[in-house]
Image (tube, rainbow, N blue to C red):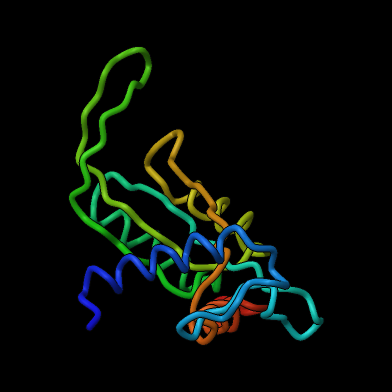
Length: 154
């Protein structure tokens, strides 16, 4: 009989096998598939991105999040309050409480998303990093792409 730890080991093994295979040889596991299998109306592969950002406080993060959704630049924004950062700024060691934001979008919207965040952000050099999503649950990835594809502001 499989234990929970055995299932975890199997999942890690599956992840390692899938992440090292070329897309055409990558199997579908537990209802997931490689993003290159998802296409938009023009037949191009969907390039879903998670954009990691930080804000100085919850109110700023919520304002930025609402603006990104309203502008059609993201399908969803996760806001994770109370993250602690340690960094060097202007030659001085700093520690600050910040708020993490993760936006779900597509590659074609990232440049506009960055421009919008910079225009709303209180930091002179905000953390805005786009991370390519390689694999995922197809209905979710399709939802992200559908929510931002060619969408105008609300």
